[in-house]
Image 1 (cartoon, rainbow, N blue to C red):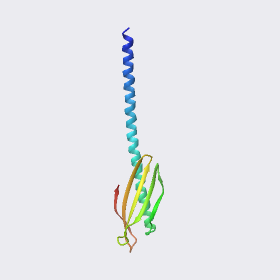
Image 2: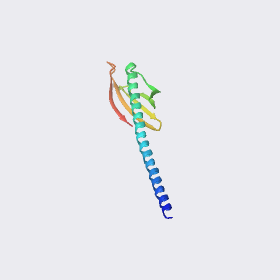
Image 3: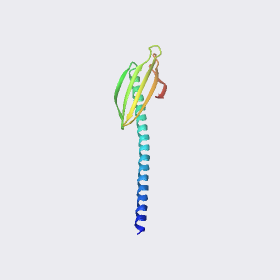
Image 4: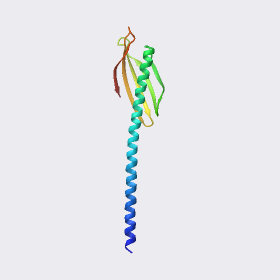
Length: 126
């Protein structure tokens, strides 16, 4: 008679441990998935900066905002703004969005007016 409640209690403890382990595995997977999405967003933003630099190399007076880049699951929006004309610097802001993660990079490039050489001054994550 006392064996049945004992078996039920042991069974409930085993089920509870199984549910707890499944929940921990789920949290672990979601954490690594979020990290992967953040990396995809960062690589997308970096690709946007590289694309904008190529557009500036082809046309040193290039300015504008565009969002035609898709890198994997990341959608990238790039903004190119020319700073004051006397500084010969251009600011590139690239935002990569992968599902729920977003990364934003800001690059400043310098354009030599004589040789039209484009050089990267700084690249920072915002």
